[in-house]
Amino acid sequence: MSELGGEITRAIERVIGPADTPVPLHEPELGEANQAMVRDCLASGWVSSVGHYVDHFEELLVDFTAARHAVAVVNGTSALHICARLAGLAGNRHRQT
Image (cartoon, rainbow, N blue to C red; front, side):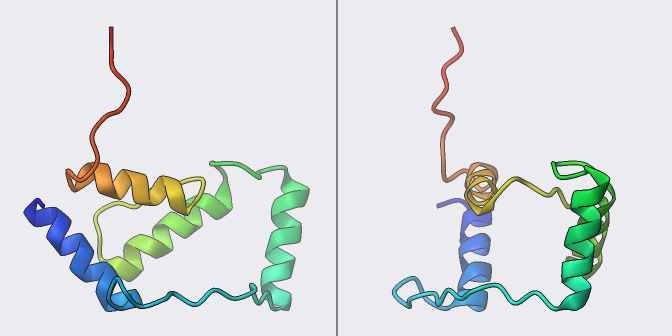
């Protein structure tokens, strides 16, 4: 495993615990403020990978993590795939001909 892969693994374990520990899932809890933002997002038509809410989320994530950049992706699977590729844990399955 690459050094970066080890760092990512340790960071994940700090958040969710060791690999053999189940991760609890729960129903989302959307308060009135969050519901208002969802309604605004739907009404604006910006329900995709761009728009004010995506930009704002990326800015907040940069502030929270002290990272230089943040990129929102479509789902958790995509995020994990990108992390694995960046850490050298997953190869490119698509061959160029």
